Image 1: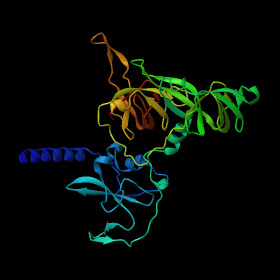
Image 2: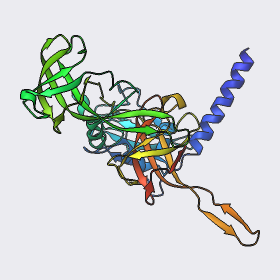
Image 3: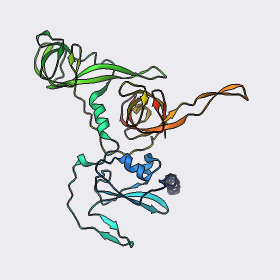
Image 4: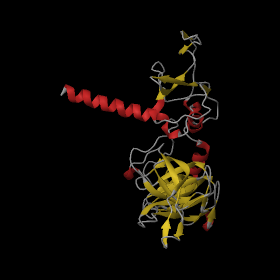
Length: 348
């Protein structure tokens, strides 16, 4: 048994060494990089690596730092080599550092308070949070079974900020504030025609003032669009993103397609939010990086007298920031050429 364990350990070490050896550093890679406010983990990864999703393979945390997964402005990312293999380490004020002549020195202890809001995010959260504030994914039947706007005050068809309105249906028990949503377009798998999810567009929020039987009176507390008869009321959804996840390659083989792009257009570019037809049931999770591939063109082989489909070529990268059972949302981090709905996604 002991020999088997030792053999397995040796195999694992060989695999780990092979993975580290396959990491490609940038040609002009710096020895040290000081994190700045406004940086993202993706941007920091591109400073050192040709393939930013390989970050976890060479990240070596300082064991004296309480939570090395949280990176703050002012921290220093240092490139070092162990047995000839590259490693990235985190240096923070008050932690041991390597002196120029090789001696280990200890910097003067300092008290540093860094709120979690200052943590360097993996991707531009401003773009992502703006999208999430406008969009919600629901299952079939969720909107149809939810309470709906019956009428505005004094029988108005449209209500706005500060207005009272009436809703009909069973209100969520114990909740005084509800979100107002409107049914949007469905997300459909282009290959199987399976319903992946329904888009619920954010309209605003309202406070429940009183309930009389199946009719409730509510007051609009927030509105981004006019509230119409038929709009639905749902409990507010917790949509906070953890800022500290690593860009990484998926643990499983993924093949799918871009099914839509935010904004109702068909062309896709840098920092666009896209929906893809793969999700948690396929093994996707937040932080996974996928390649975007343009399908190869069909050309005529004059010598053989037949049509040939050229191989697909990678034209961009996206990072998954929110995954559901059947689908996911990703942010386009890099695009070599114009991308479009229907382009293929796969492991990078």
